[in-house]
Amino acid sequence: MAKHDAKEFNDIERVPTGIQGLDEVLGGGLPKNHLYLIEGESGAGKTTVGLHFLLEGARRGERTLWITMSETARELQQAARSHGWSLEGVELCNLLVSQEMLKNDGEKYSFFSPADVELNDTTKTILETVEQAKPARVVFDPFSDIRHLARDVLRYRRQLLALREFFTEMDCTVLLMQEMTRGTPGDIQAEALVHGYLTLHQDSPEYGGQRRRLRVHKMRGISFRDGYHDFAIQTGGIQVYPRLVASEYFEEREEEMISSGLEPLDNLLGGGLDRGSSLLIMGPAGVGKSTLATQYATAAAERREKTALFIFDETVRAFCSRSEKLGMPVRKHLQEGLLRIRQIDSAEFSPGQFTHLVMNAVDQDHCQLVVIDSLSGYLSAMPEERFLSTHIHELLTFLSHRNIVTILTLAQHGVVGDRVQSPVDISYLADSVLLLRYFELQGAVRRALSVVKKRSGRHEVFIRELQIGPVGLNVGKPLTEFHGVLTGLPQFSGAASELTKTAVKNGQERAGPAQE
Image (cartoon, rainbow, N blue to C red; front, side, top):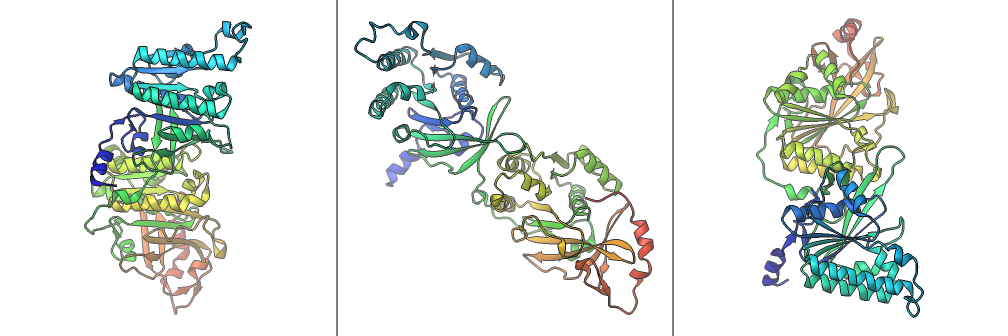
């Protein structure tokens, strides 16, 4: 591209759609005075997109026009009211077939087919209405009716070309809404002739709410973010969650370590966690993964740093109650605004929507620590499990670029022995990995803690006992007198051990609420 062309490329005048997130996908909005095709199944959100587009124009003082061949003014107003909108400033052109046309006047159709006459009348009405209203924005819903009236491909193509030239001369930016039958491609003629082409998709999982995505197939003359983007239809309209591209957020940061508030735990990790790094805590249910993550959150709050906790597996009430019983003052930090807890229902949230929540916690709430508890719940939100690692990789990279410490927990199947397995292997994505295990000793169930990976810097290779009680966490001395701890059935290999002498006593002292 020549230099003068590049400047022209960047100076293209845009028309904002009024849809949060979609304008970001489009790089600022739709290029002005062009024709765009939007396809989707029934219920995918085409009408809502059109209403957003016209009401944004009315808000900006532009003239707007809605052309329909299927909906009455009353039906359109009901759709707008469901979102709390008013159609004031939007002119309606209703091309519904009248009762007189349904009578099929024999004299009128003597030499021409009914479709030919209706298409000519429809086109004439459109041209007259646009010339009279002089709108800057037009929505034609559904435009597929024109294709049905044209009957053959050649006539439909000529009709579309004529309308495209007419709307361009009238300085109109037009959205053509078209039905898309599930499993079949859209109309190739319309796709080729319009300036831009978007599709709206919806899927119904076996359990949970609708999952919706959109894709921009083409947009002439501008760059845009390709791929699929999750979106949701809620009271108040549509919100699009653009696909995260972490490389766009890279910034140079100074190196710094943060503490967990427990010196033995920091020693295990070579002094603490690096800013901008991620920590994965793995272990079976109840072993203390959430408690460890909460320890980091409360330590951050003591430093007056904000933390965002996204919990999938328990309620906020249960989380606060459990933490308070372990001596962690989470309610105090919640009241101070240093902790923000969000309970995530994996049946209702899409991966893109969750990513949007995390990004807002960093960009708007200025959180410096993010806890995702747990990835097992996040996995449930993924309709296509094979893309889980890609989503997590982009999210962790984004958080790293923003110098955020990220803590993730992952529940493993099984309790002890070699039957303990992870539902998905993402340990290679995290910068550091803490492994928790149960082991049996002197008739008591104990917990072992070890660092199996740290990408940068040193870390301890020893396995330590983790004790959880009413006063919180305690990381014990290295279990140097035992081997086979991680198998769940350790064997004593030392001459004498204070640990074995007090096993029953310690087991009784640690009895308390279940940890997870």
